Image (cartoon, rainbow, N blue to C red; front, side, top):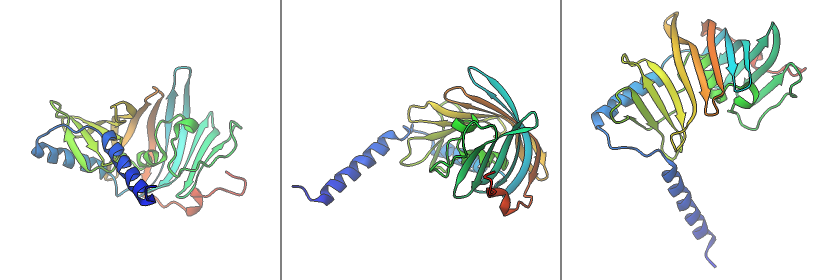
Length: 253
């Protein structure tokens, strides 16, 4: 019989090999251009990181194969993981998301489902709100930031000076930045190991609010072609937000 530690070592090696095999295939590129790609990606990742809280309002248009729905939204957010966001229709609340940093709760005001807290602190929002991103990505968007993941490699795609791929060691997912000629962002895509888009955020417009350029019109599309068009109508950066905003009341709202 083989010692237990031998089995563990074999399993560990297999897991590492699998993760490496799942990682994005990286082409041979010019190191000088890699440095430029890294700097451009880092600048976008750092954009508006000085905004630690926000409040705002806006509109969301949700499109699927079978329906189109339009909601008003209002939110308060605090970096890195706190948010209260409510969707309303015709002046009536429909759905609220509350995260206090350790637990996320989805509340239906129409009886569509009971208050629900998934096990994940960073759940996928599409099953509950039809917005096809994770909670952390949504909070970044509500803070006026670009949800660029942490990365340890960056390069321009061959023959395309406006498309940057971001890789992370031991991850089967990568991100792709599509830039305008002035280095501002046009699209951000999350890709799986087969280069299929999990989601795409297309940036249509930015607005100067105080000292920051804030994205105020975006379209988020999922791999299943679920689409959410987001327009921010009012945005207050670095505004005081009470702790109680991110807590559920005794009635669960």
